[in-house]
Length: 75
Figure 1: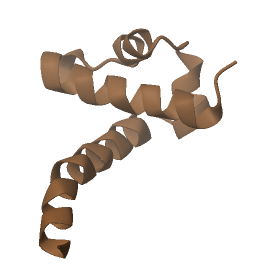
Figure 2 (figure 1 turned 90 degrees about the vertical axis):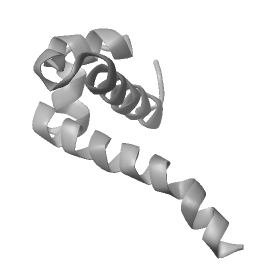
Figure 3 (figure 1 turned 180 degrees about the vertical axis):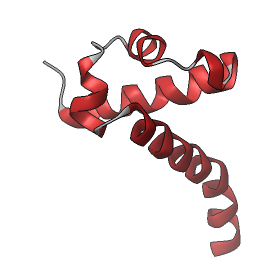
Figure 4 (figure 1 turned 90 degrees about the horizontal axis):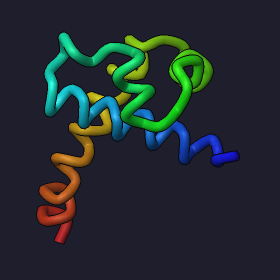
């Protein structure tokens, strides 16, 4: 069984990917779970709801986007 952080990371990455490639209309819970290779209930288990997962995925994507800029300015 995968570690908790691995499942969370897969769900976050899958959410970002589905939103990026298919758009918000196609970002159903099932599409996200399938893309992550996880069961549908894992969304609720790890995030409480699809909405909370999407919110966290957007925060994660934003952090990933700005991290290189932060590092550059820190030097």
